[in-house]
Length: 193
Image (tube, rainbow, N blue to C red; front, side, top):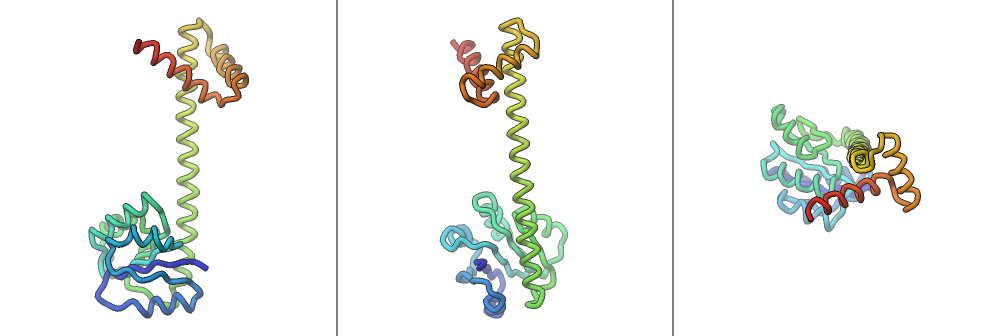
């Protein structure tokens, strides 16, 4: 059962939305009427998805969503009456997964939540893959720097330098990038003395 945190950023009551969500089989956390309580509510309630109902998202709401998105990302669905393109971009930049204009219709709620969950999962997969690729690139840079050090100090060609790195890595039971880091660190220590 998915836990949903509702943020009511409007003057209108949100009890109807809460009732519809319960009928659809969701567990609804206590409603938040102030976006400043968002980070505490996320820590305490640990919702699977967040729904923001607003006339137009305030700067405070977007800031709180951005903070939450960087600390504890969750799919966020925002229902708003404001179709301003800049505001929509700001909301998406703050971590809003799905921005729905012209209010919320109970019949459309379940598919909207499913799309938000699927989209968030795909974005999380892409973020994870990006982090992996960035890590691989960083490792490649370390290995290249270590090869240059070995080539300069040991009068080796590139293949010999890489073979030296690989052999040290196997002998020490470490990844090549870790051995490369050790070589770079030892050169830095030598030059600082």
